[in-house]
Image (cartoon, rainbow, N blue to C red; front, side, top):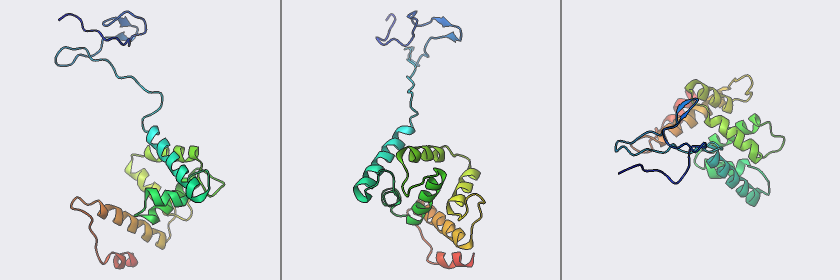
Length: 182
């Protein structure tokens, strides 16, 4: 009964629910029960940045402990992110390393975070495929792939898709013979 107001002020001018602004009403939306819902607060930092920051810091800690390097090393990247897919890890790491234009053998935390954000922003299938080809290509600027690099790309793609098959991991005993023919 009566007005239900929150103790938290979401309107900065203090005029309360139902006031108008140059953009229109500031009234919150109502739920099915008629209770006014408060709008969600927005964070300054994008939500996807937080897990990448944590991942980067963990990889840097592991690299410091195991390799004595202040940055993300290929060893920690492979060991902790892709232990079942070392070839994919190696190619992925090299792609990130090249894209970040790192002068050392490791990737600094800021560069790692930036490159991961770039990769996660890719949603278009054609861009994803192009990125995979560039990862496995000897010369990423040209995007040309040798027959051996193509086989490696096909094998990693096959292994990834079959490992996460709905009925469980699957495999074909002749996959290596098929890839030799390509």
